[in-house]
Image (cartoon, each protein chain N blue to C red):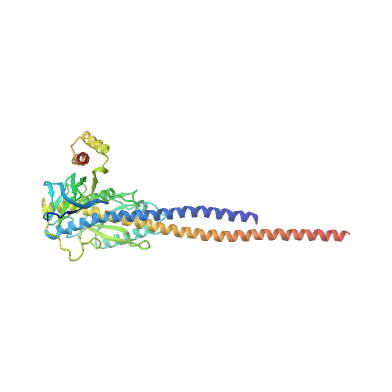
Length: 310
Length: 131
């Protein structure tokens, strides 16, 4: 009995150690969410002004730009999957990957080939394990993306989009994609984050979130040097800014998911500790009871023996 | 419009660098330097790597280095957007000077090297103008 009591105590101790770790991770995630949200708020003015400018150019000029033109016969789609670098965030990464698989299935059904681009070590592992070829991957910034990361991703994707399929001289003729989709997790609130797909290219300039208010009349801009050149410079920046937005949303979602996962792990650890404490107490009581009955039994046996000999 | 001011927002991709009221703004676009006073016609113009000078309504002068981007003016609202923008007092002058030297040492064959040089020079200029 004493042996099993020691066993239970060891279990309680190890659960307590685990609980300390999960509690710490929960608190870290919670404080980082605030930072991630601040980052998203700080990035909002840029996205808003950029959207205004792009819609101004789009409204006042009829310039056709490769990034806004729909391919007549799209045959190749790029998919950017945004996941986390680390686990212990519940179903966060697997939900995104599931959504990505669904999208891939749909695109394949439409007769498009798929180029995979991923961010986050989890997606990298997932696709490498299944031996699915990745065109490019980025890791190491999933919980605090910098604009630099978004710019790098954006430049790569825009370059692959701009590559003309007919142009065999192009550096990577096989990479000419007609569409670009992003799979990421939208941060709706601290409690709700949902995996989401947006089609980034060809651009539809009017996007739900940063749309200028209804009734706001855009001023009649003069464009320097010319509308098409302004658009040339603006659109890649717009794409980068959209990607940055997605990365920030994904980062906040990842942290929220991690906080929740760690909260429930801590709660579970508490339950376990309580359960083990009760069992350990029972074992201790049983041990004491047994000892008492042994002493009583021994004493009465001794009393019987002396009574018999007299 | 004589006593009106411009509402300026200098925004980098990840933060608002400066915002407030200003009397004049001087920035360098691809077409050349542009000076903006209140009542300016709506313009959307591309910027080159360079220096933006803001004379605030309180008579202060702020200098910022921007990395490309663009300038939009409408109804006395000026937005200067750049993927990377820094106010002169935020720039690490030693590092900027080192960057200039490094970029020059690398040679100026590639477009990329020239861009790097321009960016670093813009930062140095911004600090010198402010100093």
